[in-house]
Length: 367
Ligand SMILES: [Zn+2]
Image (spheres, rainbow, N blue to C red):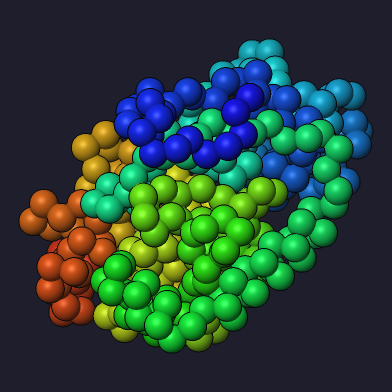
């Protein structure tokens, strides 16, 4: 497999759509030994419940109706006598079926969830606007099965992110700020840096406890986005986010997040239109906002809308008011909208004009 990023002019860079889609076989291979982490992140399934014995089901309760199959570590297969068995749809099979069940979604969505969880870019759902983005990532390299503990990776990623941040010089901040049309202050709050090794800007991704679990890379010359090896996709969380937030904006990608921060809003960024749902839920539970506002991209393939709807349905279980807004007037994303001159009042006008979702309403929609 070609592990080098494609050069400018390669067919892969000229025709992003023709980038090879990650196969199920590749996903399953990469997930061997990692299904336990995945189901924990997807639905808080405790590791000790994956020992093959009967345990409570995270979806339907009980005391012992859920169990992992003996080959769980390899295949990710589990079952529940009550709600995930041979008579249900989906029915138990491999780990992808398990995620379909846990996330209450179809195979395509479960596949996308895993691709993002692995930190692989997915050609089907680009994370930010196309206004300055170049080609999408090359096909991912298959990960080795015998991974050292995740903590070790996270320590390495943290060191990398912080050294890249500290390496930034005043001139570089100015250049980056000018290039992205975003204030230096907000870029610094996101701990953006520069990696000489990758020849790209670095954007730390964090879990709900704000620990760095991945580093997004973004080429300044091509706009290409990819991740440092062993990254997990997480949230872009600024420093100085209050411990209790009244209204939390949830943007798609770090640059949209920085744009909303620049207007004085409390904001976090998702790694893509459908990524980091569990981390977002956990963070929202900790921040207790009275309202969450998901700012979705108004993209033509509806990926932004679908991702926002899925997140809203989950957020409604932990936040009293959830709204989804789309940048008006043909602006593709929040940065584009704010660059064109939108101020905080104009954003709030759109927020107030949007429908509020509560748990009650969402339940009716799901029915
Ligand atoms: Zn169940």
